[in-house]
Structures are given as C-alpha cells and as structure tokens.
Image (cartoon, rainbow, N blue to C red; front, side, top):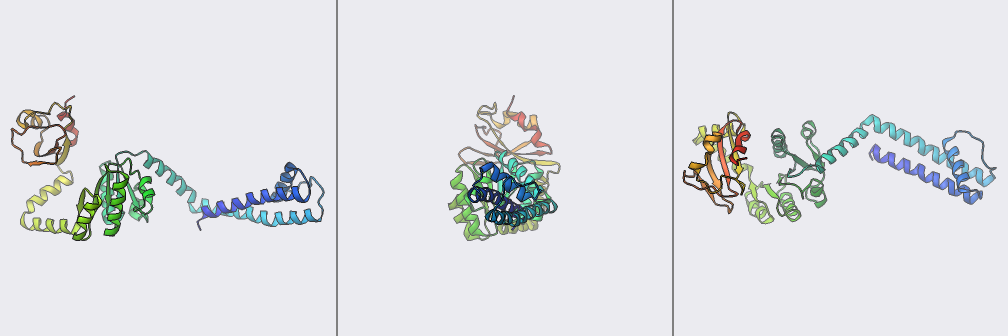
Length: 328
C-alpha cells in the first residue's frame, strides 16, 4: 500500500473517531452535540483542558477508548504525512496533475500505445519535431521518464484509458504493443471510439496484417519486412538509401506532404504554371488525389485539384516556405 493511500486511510480513521466520540458522549452522557464534539477534540488531541462535564464510569471508559484509538490514528497520520514528503509522493501527485492538465489541453495529437523500443523511438521523434503526443503503457519506462513524455499508465485496450489519452480529440493513434492480439484489440477499440482517427498498427507476424486492417487500421507496419527490404536496397541501391536517410534526418534536404486547400489559388492550375518551384525551390514528386489515386512523377501539364496532397522535395527548411503555395 502506498504512503498516499495509508495517509488517506489514517485520516479517515481520525474522522471516524471524532464522529464516534461525539455520538458516544451524546448517547452515554446525554450531552449536546457541541459539548460532545468539544470533549472529543480535547481528548483526541490530549491538550489537557478541563472537562466540560463530569464523567461517570461509562464516560471514563469511552474517553480511554478515544485516547487509545484516536491518538494512535493521529500518530500514524503524521508518520504517513512525513513518509509522503520524504518519498516524493506529493511531488509525483503534483506532476501527475500537471501532466493530466497538459494532456487535456492537447488537440489533434498522436496517441502512442506501447513504450517499448519502437514506441519510445516514435515518441522521441515526435517530440523533436514539436508534435503533440501521449504515450500509453502499463509501465512507465526509464526512457519515458528521462524524456518527460506525456504518459498515461494503464491498459491501452481499455476504453477509459484511450479516452483519458484524448482519443476523441486525437488525429492519429499508433499501436506498437508487444502482442499482435493486443494491437488488434486496441485498433478495434480506437476505431469504435473515433471513426475519424488515423490508426497505424505494428504487426509482429505477417498473418496478422489482414486482421488489423479488418479491425480498422489504416496502415500496418511490419518491422521485419521493412528491415529486410531496406537491407536489400542497401545491397542493391546504397545511394538511394543514403539519400532517403539524409532526408529523414533533415540534413540539407527535406521531404514534405502538403494539402491544397479548396480556396487555394493553385486549384485548377497546371504544375508548369503554378510557380511552385520558382516560389519555394521544391519539386513535386507525387500527387495524391482526394479519391486516393496516386500520381508519381507528375507531368508539367498535370492539373492541381482541391484537397490534393502534394509530395514535395527540396533543400532544408522546406516547411518554412510551404505557406507561400496557398497564397495570402
């Protein structure tokens, strides 16, 4: 039992003794509620004031019981309070309240279920990019504490825990728990809570991918498959891997995805007339239409449509120049 719980219980005992002593004096001695409460308080605190009414044998027995039980409860309460201060439990409680307030203030954030190696790496990367994210796991790892992740200790498969993490306000959820069954269950739960949520889930076994997609996952990641494909690429096309790694690390070049608003002056404009390259110095390498159609290496006469997702590549600092695409 934690010091915090013990303190609450010991304080509850003191309150019970106060109420019981007051009622006891009222019933045994026939005194008023105020006199009975006053007698209980001075007895419990052992201040040594004169009795407010004369005690008979029953009253003396009741007084002794109040002294033994109540004084013990007060002493235990003080000991638990000291233990709380020394152990840092009060600080943890305050930090927990502050973290809860920060989580409640998030909107369009990402929920990361699982704080293992993969989850911690994702959270660290999101933190470096300044994106809001909440990590959910049963155990708070040393890395989560060291990096000050917004953390919720709990079972991510439970509705209440995902709601506490802000599933109704989040833009995406990543499930990277250590069990495929748990990832499927988290996906089902999250999809039911928020049909608009973008869900990315890890599959430890290839046979689980179809189940995760049926459960509602938008994307399924298999670390083994990705790792194998990258090794093959490094063996066959090492320069491509170096280029992509440089882009991912933000070294001199950048890759970005940009959505064309319906009111953007770019709508209805061919790429060659859009001025994108002239204004920003970036190249459009792909276009994803609103209906899901993807156009790789679009031609100069390809017309930009509303809600298109433009995949852009260019020199570092790309994100700082993207707003010029949409006009004033």
